[in-house]
Length: 210
Image (cartoon, rainbow, N blue to C red; front, side, top):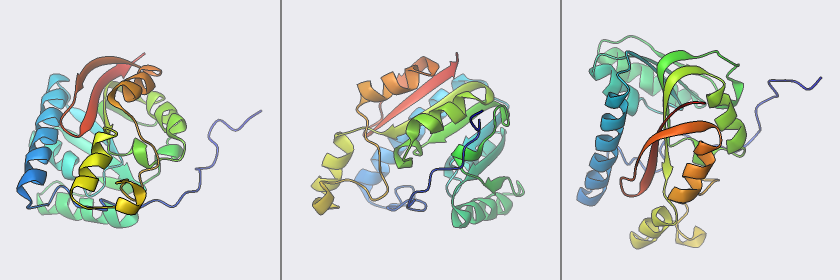
């Protein structure tokens, strides 16, 4: 019988935010992030979630937004440094340590039980995004909120600011590239899509388990 939980695919992950978009003081970058946060806050609020789990929490930016709204949040990330930073930030805000080092691929069926599972800016980093999506779909949650960069707009904007030109604007660590239509088809293969937002330059989807 095949192993239902095969070993995590080996890949060279680029830890954290290669370009720290969350902390950027560039006015254009701030405007773009405000659009992202606005869409995230709107869609997550629509779920009425009391509990949440963030897969790929990074430094905890989105989890802290949810914690600030009184939602009980836990989370995980592949990178130990990011998890340490997320826990330090949670402690500084009086929430205690809430994050652990785990790969999305290592999540067992039904391991996570929460009103909302968040997986934003993660799937584009995976060598096998289909396996990652299946790991999400195997969890116990009423709603799922996922996002990825919208291509080719993401790379075009990188080129416009003179970044990663040798790679045609591709951010280091981005292994997958979806248009809005392509990402909706991808998510829709495993979930029922409720709502979609397109804050430039992302695609953000609120879905429920099928």
